[in-house]
Image 1: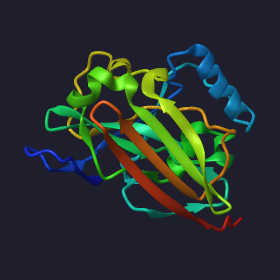
Image 2: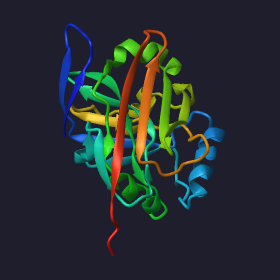
Image 3: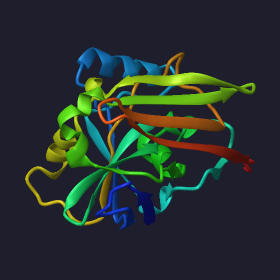
Image 4: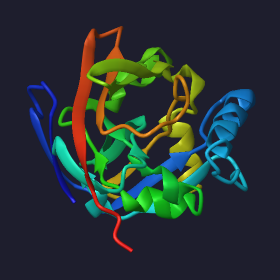
Length: 226
């Protein structure tokens, strides 16, 4: 899947990236109690607990999209803001993705639920080398629209999650990374619990370099026809 990012950098103002492998990392909290909280959060919706943590789900790359108007099947879907790391021209870059998921299907199969929905991606990116040293200070936020009002849905620093380099080391286990690899690097718990939402905003803020990656999108629901 072809994605285009702006960077604000003189040496690489625009990145044209062909993602050829997409992995979604799940259950990535550093604090085991926080991971168990997220597991219980999903169990309340009928989602079975994982067999191990973290887990890595392969998803087809054609599910990635940088559009702001998307379609889903049914009314039981919602997003989760996550750091998005990809390997391009010999180095890692950072952007922002929503692991938009079918919550009804998730109660039967987490892997299939992740495959069922498009994954919206921001159109800006940072060099990993510029943020790796202060990664834990990056601030992740998301909002959902409820009856016309934007409500905070997720909020916190990335200090509560395993770092991308830790996740990548676990996933590749010493094997080399290839051009076009991308990983969605886990998420924060939902404030007030996971729930469907058709309008979603997300942001990753860097308080050290004072900049923000942002994206928003809406989903239109197609009917569920038996």
